[in-house]
Length: 103
Image 1: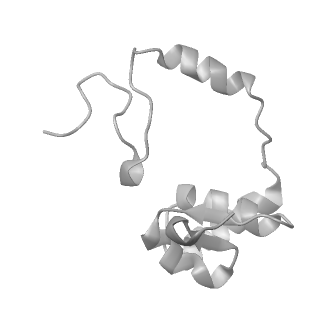
Image 2: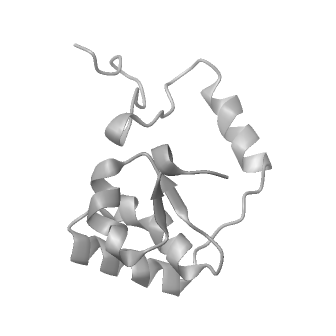
């Protein structure tokens, strides 16, 4: 009832984020994403910061990884639609609610 179909990779992820479903061009979508060559922040400072944020805020590590990148970058801010996480992590700085974000 309302969940992803049997055999799918996923229909909706945590808090409604869109995730891949089996078929319907998913392999081609993944290839397209890989070809885009996004910059990757995988240094130890980001990983340590994300781990500390997760422990101190009581949030999942996947919630804190993007925030850690923003905190470890000189001119970055996490813009999030996840109000629950934003409320818990606002004290760390560099986080803005999507509804309040202006470019």
